[in-house]
Structure formats: structure tokens, C-alpha cells
Length: 386
Image (cartoon, rainbow, N blue to C red; front, side):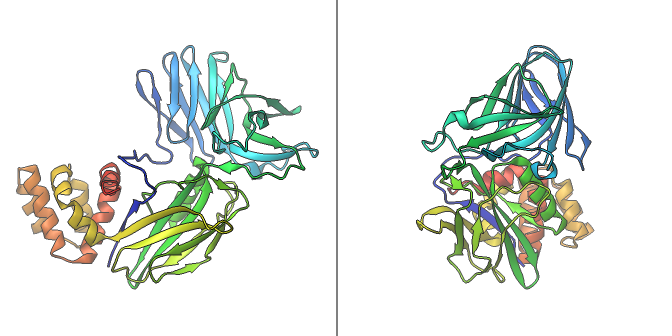
């Protein structure tokens, strides 16, 4: 029984920060500010900014510059769930970012709002005049021209409504717009084989959250990966392959924007018992250009490579010991033996050796527990051999 660790081979160096998709905190001028989840099913949140300054939600790239204390209510909405959002038929509109429903109290204290977009900049293919922030009100769609930065668009002294970023393209130009994208890889463990699900999606945090939620229902675990090394394009087709005997269905993925409420396209990859490392690669179909690849290793390899780091850096083991005992990897007596050791490194070493001796299935359960209990450490270790 095995579990895997993903290492990116995209050419990046150093450590990449790992943050959950919807981490419930803004970064503010005086530290982190907690976000209240009002309604999970409606993706509705509330946050109070206590002092003037700039506040950023890193997980979504949504930001606010405020001149005084203010309470902001944020709901993430779906473009496809609003067919009443009539767009101008003589223009070609392209969704370029999430759809938000935002309100503030008191009004008039938000000097700037930074709205995330999915367009890859700088890019010669994109004219900044194409960007519009669309407000959807009773009187119809109202457009504003924002200042455009690589990952967000800025409105000064904004009004609030149902709002999102659209690109307005002349209907006859027929160009391809480069999209900032993500590759999401999930593993599913079964006794006789390992299965992966691979998604290519625009960098929309709400879409990623919807996929995370759906995969979690079926016990899928998302692995740490880097984004594609090149911008992707809507409508382009990408071929999924691997340097091992893999069964991949379908082998072709087409990048498109599907709202969070819609089913998202993915490739299923069947890897058998996965006794050796394997490599996944995604190639653009027409030009045969490699846009993303990653290495996936069995858990035994990860444990051998990182035994010393785990011994030195594991912290509170109580949650991990609970998981191991509940899964019958260790007995009550073995748990007490570990807990009686006072020196932290020796305690960690004892636990690691104890689980290693019990075989691959025990290591798989330990690794899964560590991913849940200390995701930052596991993400850090997964990047060390880049």
C-alpha cells in the first residue's frame, strides 16, 4: 500500500509557500485579520478591518485599501448561475475573473479594491483597454475601466454590487488570450492500484475550492504541484502523458472556464500499485510544447529522503498518534512508549522507526496524517529537491 509525494520539475527554485485555497485571514497593516464564514453553501464571508491600510486575502488575491475601520461582506458567485446578466450582443465578452457580490459598512471608506483576474500579463496579445469591471445592477450592466496589474485590476473609490472582470473583444478578431492557469493533481488510494485525477483550470480560487470540495467527498488528496510553466489558452487542447505504464482517460484536456457549480473536466490516471516514481507531462497538442510536468514518488522514497528532517522538525505528535492508533497502526502500549520520551528528536525518531517496521500500509497512513496535521512542513519538504 502506497501514497505519493509530488515534486515539481517546472524549473522553479527555492521554497514555495503553501496556503489553503480559502484560508480565512486577510493580511493587514497590523497583522492577520480573521474572516468569518457566514454561509458556506453560499460562499459568503464577513470581515472587519479595524484600522486604515491595505488588506489582502492571499488565497484569493482580493484586496482592499481602506481609509478607516470598515466591515466588508463578500460572496463568491457563479457567472453561469446568472443568465439574466445580459451582455451586449455586438461584442464578444470573455470572463476574466471571479464574480463577487460585495457590500461595505460604512460606505465611502474603501479607497481601492483589487479584483483578481486570470489573464497572463505582460503579454503582447492583450490590450489593457479590453479590461472592464462590470457592475450588474437593476438598470443593467455598468462598465468601469480599471488600472490593470499582472494579477489584479484596481478600481479607485469603487461602488459595490454584483461585479466581476470581463474582457471585451471585437467579435471578428479571433485572437487567443493567454490565461494564468493551475494544474491540480489528486491521488486516490485503492488496495490494488493508485488512481490520480488531473485538472487544468484557470487560476480562479473559487473553481479550485469547488474541485477540492468535490474530490474530498471521494477521499481525494490534492498534492503539491507548481503551475504550468507557460500561459495556457482557452480552447487549446493539451495531451496528458507519463513516463511509465499508465492508463490515462481521456488523454486530451481542453482548457475552458467552467463556473464552480458546473462539473469540471479532468483526466483519470491509473498507476497500478506504483512501485516506482513516475512522471506526468502535459503537452500542447498543436505545437508539441511541454507546458507542465511533475514527478511523483512512492511514500517509502519520501520517508527515506526526509527521515532526518521529519525527526528534527515534527512538533506536537498527539494528533498523529491518534490517527495511527485509530487505524490500528500502533497499539496503546506503543503510543505510551512514544509519549514517555521527553526529548523531542528521540520521540520523533522512535515513532518513525516504529512505523517504518510495520510496512508500506503503515507509512501510507502516517504520511496522510502528517499531510493533514502539518501541511506546511510537508509542502516544504516536498520542494527541497527541486
